[in-house]
Length: 322
Image (tube, rainbow, N blue to C red; front, top):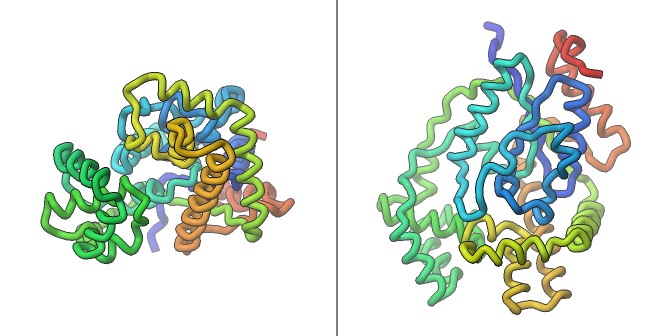
């Protein structure tokens, strides 16, 4: 059997509030790893507190590529991420180091490694019309339409996942074919890197929920609502932008619109974050080639270090920065 000569890469995946950033920074201290963010919200500038973006001190010591690369008014897609991530990963590999991709956006990880379907470009006219229809009839009505046109897509897209719902309907109008059918036609090429996947999967969901609530309360204390007020004051941002639909920001925007009181806002934001974590965990369990690491165990760092050292092989000692 020929030896796999591809450069190495590490995927560190996990649900929100599972401790991914701390572990990634620890690993980059121990090995010659350069960090790449895999997060659909951290790409946006000015969205720091509500995204739990690593602070300036952390980023100064442990730089993360693909953080703060978009204005919140600009969309950022999985295709954009694949282009950006591959470019950064090539640069890291050419420097003789190993890219460590860390984050919780499963779609980005999967698109990067498996490729994207050949789907049509976005059509602003169709998108505007669908958004207008949603305002008149509600997104559940559009979800019901999708269920008739593409039952498979409707089964995996929630009625309140407006971005993906809009895209699925848009694709059908542009091609006359269901999104699920087109996605099934994708032919993934061999990924240019050999990958170790580490998945932080908490066994105790209650402890994860507790951390989510604690972290959200800390965000409020740090000025999360003031951050959102600053975004609103710009005047060019609105609730239907992908950036503003991010978990926490959507609920804060509605609260500042006067639709919820402070208690209801907090409860809804924490619930939405828990639902996000649930979806992330479900996706991670489908990654059968991932090495599971329990984030609540005291031996977390030791087990992760051992896995990385084994993956890097004989070069691990030379690459170690410790």
